[in-house]
Image (tube, rainbow, N blue to C red; front, side, top):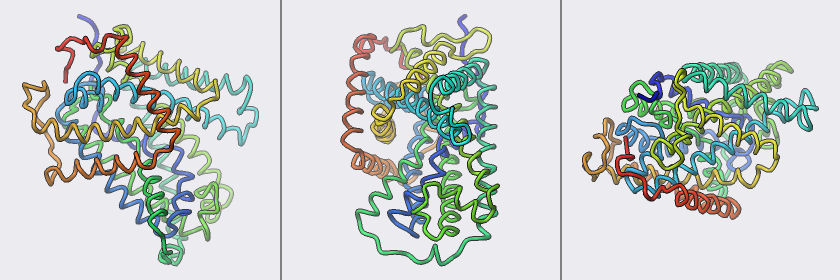
Length: 435
């Protein structure tokens, strides 16, 4: 009997995976960007958009309670809308993860370059990127528990400096900087809302390793909702501190480090600087885990060559998918041309969110036998209201996408369509649609 993936992830492992992806390096610079648009309204904006993001997360929770396999949104949209739609969602999931992994590795080298300038170019940069990629790939090959320990460790390590920043910083907040609400127009509110929607992105990774979760139908809904709520509390309070401590937070390119320096001195700035590197490294570790599982899921469902779905006989991990995803991410990082391909993430996120919200409605009307999915263990409240709100959120993402993002996204979709045809995805056997 061929080896299979090992179920070893609990609900808090999945939650750590989600929090690790949502709270990345961007949290250390976003306070200034949001405040530049809506000023002291920013903490309220974080809460409101957090609740809107929760509408999408609840759709993931409901549909996730029907499945036990690996793939997340790929499985959901494939069951609801067929092979081609599912493949495109899965392909875009993997592509966005691989490019994101490459961009985060590059950003980590830049962050370290502040202390070691040689790290930003030439062979030192190449050696660092290769070493980072090899380390995380090796951990992932060794086992899902080892991967979870690393992600859990990085998640705790990134939350510690944030907790210190918030806990101590709240004592130095000037209330007037949060209560003097400036007038804002619709354009400013809309721009801030789109920024915040993207800030909350990342929770969609929670159901991807469902095939390695102990109780995916119960734990995925818990973890994905917990991820959004935890992220909302942390990011809102971080905004409160940064905005309440600095006289003009929008004028700072490194707002959290500058705020920490204001009430903790140079040590505070160093704490946040180290925290940002840890945060990016943890995010990178999570990208390896999730990106490889997406490639594995496509192969498992016979929509990509079977060798990509090979499971290591000793470690029970998708070894070829891990090595392939890591190698491609390293090549992209070394190339240094990430701006254009990273634009694909906007459309990829739109497909995952909108596809899952639509699948929520579609699978409610389908019988388990007809769609080969299980009954929902969790149902979002208020009928169709939550999925429809989630679709409106997706429309906001689409409205905020730039021309380049849409063009590169469509190019990636076209490449996916070509790959679908070449791989014989349209001729996948019916029994490949497994939950």
